[in-house]
Amino acid sequence: MPREKTSREEILDQAPAASSTNLQRWRLAIRYYTFVILGRSKERSDAAQTLGSMPLPKPKNAAAQNGTCIRNGGSYPSIMTGYAYMTASQKRGTIYIGVTNDLGRRMPEHKTGQGSRFTSRYGVQRLVWYEEHFDIRDAIQREKSLKRWPRQWKIELIEKTNPEWFELFRGTGW
Image 1 (cartoon, helix red, strand yellow):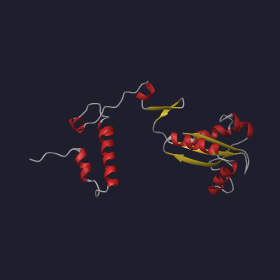
Image 2 (image 1 turned 90 degrees about the vertical axis):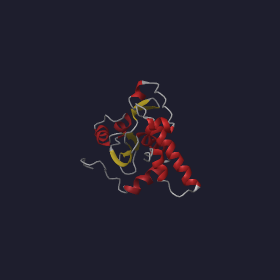
Image 3 (image 1 turned 60 degrees about the horizontal axis):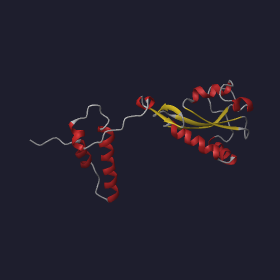
Image 4 (image 1 turned 45 degrees about the horizontal axis):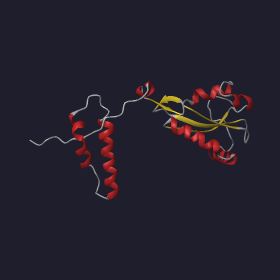
């Protein structure tokens, strides 16, 4: 009676023709599968032990144990969508760059003056550009890089998708 294949052998059977680049990629995929997928189970199976998966290090704080990520002093779930966005006071007017995990909640905050002091002081309430990111950390990084851009680059980015600087947030009159 033939023995059952382990998950590692199944992956190897699916491997493409053996070029050095493809072979390296498949080896990395096998290591990832062995370490991450099988190593995360609470009760280590026989397959995980025979494949030689390494135990994961224990989190050092309570936030990490709950599945949250702590970076730059903030705590948020490690898998959360995010938006980088730009608001303006008028066409080619004052520009504000921000990041949020819920654009539908954040824009009314800006319009009622609860958003930030800058937006309430300068009347920067018109959503003119936004990008959705699958990970909030990517959105934060995008916001930081946009803030370093020269003003003309920001204007060109907005005018690529919204040449008339119309309000993109639905349900408001502009």
